[in-house]
Image (cartoon, rainbow, N blue to C red; front, side, top):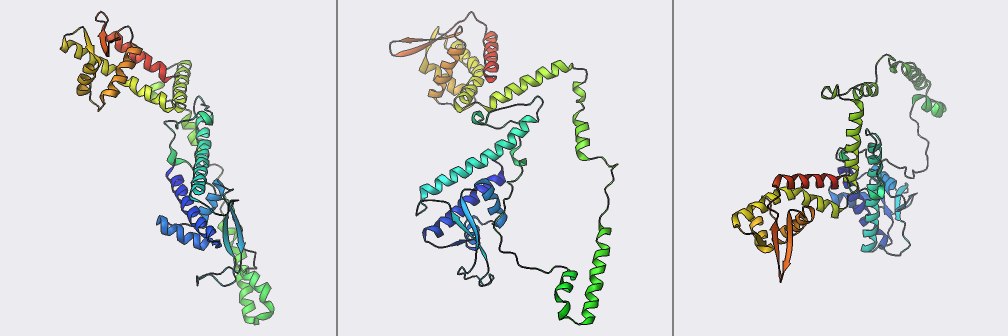
Length: 359
């Protein structure tokens, strides 16, 4: 997820912990208490706009109210003033640890759903457009930059009852005309007129001739790169369609398919090593354990003998006409088809890998 979404998820976890602690003690949870608790836990600023974002993501989590006459020990809060209160929407009398874990999981899923919507918009903007059902999506498109996803929008919170506020000289004049001296009244009238005269001058019309950024971007995107000039449009469309199909398949693969493709990508190098092992041993057949040990010591990455055996069995499955596994008594023996060129085997492995990447 985007970094800012991860921070918001951590803020929700901290906020829910503080709210649950106050709720379980039958104490009213005010924003002032929650803010202090969250900032102590996260060592980050926690403001009302973060609560607004949390409400957007998980509106069913809390009930927000503006209440007054709530006991407070904060000197900055005027006695009897309205305060924002937060109450969890739970039917249970206590918020247990398992309940908090469930709420955290729901919040995370809702955040992922928001990112999926942005991802869907990105896929529809591609040429050609790509469509992947949400329940089939297992990873983001390679060119989808999650850190550029817009922040979560804010929802409105209950506001304290409206109290009349005087903000302009004209309002003050109308309200207190009977309470001021003639000299002060004359000064306020002069200030009100001056404000009205200067306000329209601050606005400057925008030039209709200036091109917009979107028009410039659209014009530049319509141009093909220099390297592609002269290439037929039908060929470009076929290449883009194949690339889109490949990327769509990559975004819907599960972990089992991903592991198999990773193993398939290693097979060409392992086939070369296995052939060299047979050449050095000068034997028509090799025991599986011996072959695995030799290949583990020759392979550039760290693989266990058990993992190497899985790769050899996959190699025997994909290139069955080159490598065969024969069970004899309690052992498994490997045998190569020496009449087949290694280059043919490598081409076959590469083709098979490309086919499975498109699935």
